[in-house]
Length: 85
Image 1 (spheres, rainbow, N blue to C red):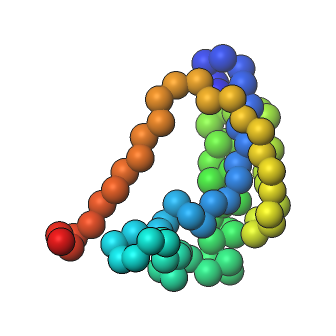
Image 2 (cartoon, rainbow, N blue to C red):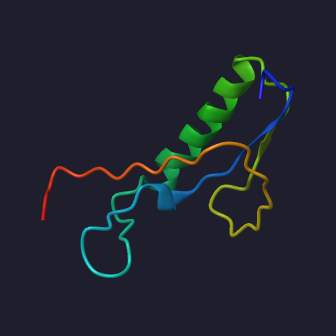
């Protein structure tokens, strides 16, 4: 965002911390509760502003939202487990 003068939209997404080892649907039971996660999301947005990104917009924490985006670049998906099947 700094290099191109762009902005950042910060949207919390609990599905980023999912356990997909069993069954057909992921479990989100280990995701942080709202009283811990909400301040972390706010701190992340503040850190972006501190780095000089002037336009940082926030989603509504815990709300159902429809977000329209255009991604420019690769996507990285990291699957990690200490347990092997």
